Image (cartoon, rainbow, N blue to C red; front, side, top):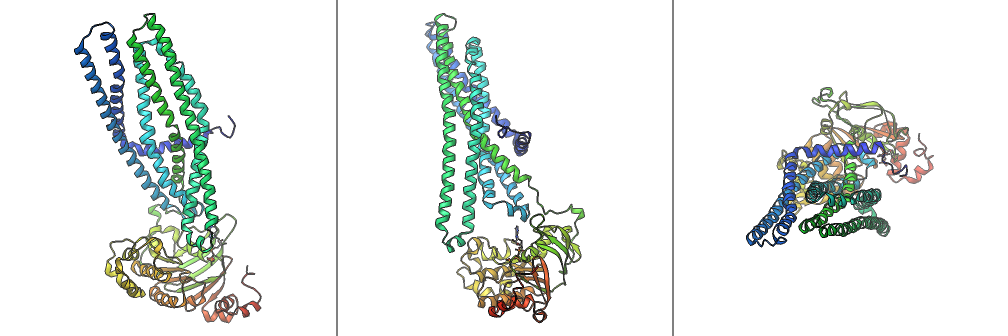
Length: 607
Ligand SMILES: Nc1ncnc2c1ncn2[C@@H]1O[C@H](COP(=O)(O)OP(=O)(O)OP(=O)(O)O)[C@@H](O)[C@H]1O
């Protein structure tokens, strides 16, 4: 075995941990599994007693010319009874196992979804959403197959094997020993194929997950793809991935077929071998004919469970792979987490004072995007944030929302370090409106109150009236009950924005953040949004990131950022008077490009 393929202690440890994790989910269903084992035992006994009944009929009746019709009829009735009981127990066993398997998987899926939700933004930065979809959907489904197929086969078929060996030994120990010659060959074939099947299976799963991830990414970026006429390129890339998955699947199937056929051949050879050895024994009168008949029936039945167990090998491989992937998700600890409850500070009546206290932050080690940033915001103040692309404006907001933790320095809300506040409390205090507000598939009413039934329809209508969205909602076919589809398609950018403003009014956060909220709007809609913004910002500390200077011209204070630092600060008039970067941005936004270009390009040379 090459060094690369050698399972190291770590991989055994991981497989052990993930199966222990699965066992913890299976534990509450212990009694159901006990029921499954009991049903399997009774079903197998009913099955395996049947050849023995025929042996009794042959050796104790037919072969000795007893001609006891009553005994033959009784044997036949008993035989039929055993068949029916076997059917009944197998039905019961399947149902119990399905119940346990489905319940376990539903619980894992629920916990997995909750665990993914707990992760910090950095986790989503490095984990493609497509792979998370695969974990929640198909990986959990594989675990279900493990319970309903693999476990069923392991329980039922391994018990069948033991029963058959016991019955064969009872009939004739010598023939049993001859039959057992095949066992080392079976082990050899299993070991030989094991390594290859595992590798091909893992490869196929990786191809599938790449294809799903690619599909998910394309669906979320569909606007961009169509706008840039990227359909053909994306189709070609998809076709490549699809083809790789097809090839990987075919390779895996080829391996499985070879594996299964090897067992069939082995089974047929064993029957021929036993017929030969057993036939000689019958000629020599060493055994009775009925014994040989029962023996051949058992040896045929002997290969069935072995074949079943080995057929489950693929599923076992896939379960290991899926389980490891799910386990990896469960092992991920959120980088941003709440302190112990006793260390958390309660949020009293928040005033909305914010202090960025010499904050340093970078997404990657040794690459700061916020450098020693110091900013003090008074309660109720409206702050405009402008700056060049990549200056760190959105990162600053992400830090305030605690999507990431600062690396040095601190952020204080009313004097409390936000790391000492429960995230749920912090997020209730801060309202975030983004350039593309997220809307759920549902009614307008539910979108404004975010499915919180405690918020009445009147409150929602009042909020919409305040931000000027009421008139447009009333014009819609079903008013507030109008259903909007995923991400709010069917509504204009301005309408989506107004709905997200109404949300702010309803949830009453003390701090309001608008991240480029008016960037996508035409000037008429922007005017509408500006008016709504003034209403929404009333009595709240407000931070507005804007590309258009017009959005923040009236802010109490404007900060200009570049390369993670504040380079200018003041109100609109003060900043213009400084004739610095702000003035340049202002001239750009006013369309005075010619003037701006005569100036040295100070914005891009900042830092
Ligand atoms: N999730 C992320 N992972 C790694 N780097 C990031 C991430 N988000 C932003 N950055 C980088 O951090 C820097 C600051 O980005 P940020 O989005 O804060 O700038 P910005 O001022 O909001 O820019 P824009 O006006 O273009 O939105 C940029 O260099 C950007 O590439």
